[in-house]
Each structure stands twice: as structure tokens, then as C-alpha cells.
Image (cartoon, rainbow, N blue to C red):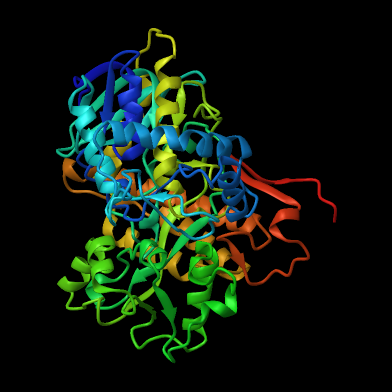
Length: 542
């Protein structure tokens, strides 16, 4: 096969969403930087698709301490407190970076950044650009990137991380044509996003396949809380070809009301104080319960209604939502949307320090691929802030790594060649394995979970991992490796869900009765390192 395609850099960034680009921009201050993107830089991933906003304490009546409290309470007290402190402390400075770099956010009449209310937060602290906030952020970051010397490798997939002893020294890659390559680096940053594509219905782009979790896990990094998968309460269900498409929380932030098929505003049963602006886990369970108990719409959802709002408010504050639904023949100014929960965000991931260091030397991580920031449930608006806060921190930490001599282990490269050769001799299509996995995860590892369903999922994932994947051309190499990453990540989600014998945040076990609340739970993080797995036990007053 040959390994002539080799290069070296000071910092290698894997992933090209908000966290990856921010990390690359920062790391370049310290030396040469390369970005590897399996899509087109800035076009794949979830940041560019994010609609709702970016949480930051900017108003005088708000406080960083309150943002901290809201985040930890919303996260069911499973958050890493040091990471939350970093998030809420740095978020205002990082949004000012974007503003100073030219990002066009909505402004108030006195020309300060406008902020809207989002679920689980005591103050309106979600900054926004209409309902296309992530797109505005990424376009601004791309302009910054274009003015740099960062080398970009688009449509290139990382097959494996390279190590020398304990430390990571680069990655093995395959481009869209199946040409293999090696990029060595003094430091590597994983910014690969989440894994919504493990599920049949998801808001995620096709890039959300969990590669970073699997790559980090195989490199020996510690992962935590992989069972904590957030189902966004409001994904479209009607018309059918819009299924799973994200209906931004901004719709509820602007005053949208949830109703069941009988026209009842049902959230008063689940959170009478916060109603539609409760945390995402509560709203998602509320909607799911209404549907499961027979009060859903004929399309299998509930109604999200903004028809009581002035048309001009919808047109100004929710232009993308209005436009999207008009394309489907639905005018949200005059008729309600139909929505149901959809797989959205992974709160678990690689364990990091506040400086974005993983448990493996010279391997850093930022964004959704990490765990601990959001605990058991993410507040809407905290993810975009996460990308900028920890993207910058990862870039600085990786940039400060010392330089050293490094070369790829010939035995590792040979093993990858052998693996690819076996793929040509396989007997099972990649697409069939993915389809079966997505259906399995949706049916058995969704919002409501129990041991029997989880054990079935565990067994069936094991069977899928034993399949001999088949490819017929070099262009299919990346897809086969990505599918194996999906199976690895799915296995970690199921293992975590079995380990966490409680309901906590986004993880609901219907087969377990518990005496404790989230605040005094006897359990901490679930964790995975190599062949070892467990759940931390914490001291409580029980």
C-alpha cells in the first residue's frame, strides 16, 4: 500500500467544528498546525448547524456564580466543577473574541449583545444571531482561519492515533480516495464532536459518528459518563421527510407552547414552575410520556405552537425555522409544528482537566467529545460556549507542548495494512451494520431504559462487532473504520447505562426505584479505561 504520504506539524487538530477551529487558531501562535476534517472544514459537524445561542453572563443583574449553579443543577450534579467554573468564567471573554472578530449577533436598542431566555436558566443569558447562531460563529472562525498558516486536510479520516510509549505522536489517515497517510505531531487535539448517528433519529449531521470517543478509548484515554445521551425535546416529525430535524429551543425561548393532541398544555404536569423552559431532560420525558400514553398526534409527536406570537416576531427571531417549515408546506405563523424527542448531544466523553488535557500525555480534547462539563444533562446554549472556552484552552495547552523526535511504528502501520486487506475479504456490508445498529440503539437505549433492553443491546452489538465488514474499493476504507468506531462507542454507551443503576439527568432507568435525588446520589462518574470499567461511589448523607 505504501506510506509515502507523510507530514509533520507541532499541533494536529482532529475535527473542524467550533472547538477544532478555535483550537487551531490558538495553537498556531506556538508553531505549525494541521487540521484534519473528514468533511469540509467548517461545513460538517454540529456547530455550524446550531441555532439557539451561546450562554454568557453579560447583564449586570446576572452573575457567573448563578450561571455555575444553573449548569450544575441542570447537569444533575454530575458535572466536573472545575470544568464548569472554567466554562462560566471564560464564556463572556470568548464571545467578545467572536464579536471583535466580526460576528454579527443580534443587538439591543443600546447596541449591546441581545440575550434570550433558555431552559433551566434564571436569567436571559443566551446570546444569539437570529436562529442561526452556530453558522455565524463558524463563518467568523473560518475568516480567522483563512488569515492563518494552518494547513487543512479536508475529506480525510483518522483511522488510528499513533503512540510512542504512553504519549500520542500523531495519526494514521485515509483521504476520500483511500490514499493512506501519516501525520506526526508534538501534540494532538481531539475535537470530533458527538455520536448522534448511533441513533435512527438524530439532529446530528452525518459526521456525528463518535470517532473521537473510539480513537481516544483505543489510545488508552479515560472516558466518563458515556450513558448520558441528551435527546433534544423538539425534533420535527411532520412532514415525514423532516423527521429528526432540530426545532431550536429558541422557539420555546420566544414563547412557544407545547400541547398534546387534546390541546392541553401538558408541561404543567411535569414542571409547573418552568413549563416549556424546564431543562431538556424533563421536557423530553414529558413529551415522550404524552406520546407513549396515547396523547400524541397522528404523526407520533406533540404540537409546538407559536401562532399566538406576532408574525413579525417569528419572522425576525426565528427566520430559519419559518423558512424550513415553509419548504415543507407548513406556515408556523398560522399552524403548529409537530415535534418529538430526537438524539442530540453526548454529555459524556473523554475526561479532561480544565486545561483540556486528557489522561494520555500529549493528547488534548475539546467540545462534545469530552465529558464532565455538562454532567448528566446539558443546558441549551452551553455547548457553543463550550466549543470556544475549551477550544482555546486546548489550543494553548497543546501549543505549549515541547518538541521531540517522533516516527511512526512500522508494526502499527503494518497492522493497519493487514486490517484493510481483510476488509476486502469480508462478507457484510457497512450500510447493513450501521442500519441495524441505529435501529437497535433507538429501540433499546433511548430515553427510557431497563436492564433487559440494555442486555439485548449489549449482546446484539457484540454480534455486529463480530461481522466481517466488506469493502470493494479504497474509497470505502474510511467508512469501514468509522463503522467500527460507531460500534465501539455504542458499546460504551450501553455499558455505562448498565453500570448506572439510577435515573439521573438524561439517563432514565424504569426498572430501578431509588431513594435519592440527583444532589445526594451515591454515584459519581461511570468510567472506562482500556479493559476496565466502573462507577465512582461518593459519600452521601443517606
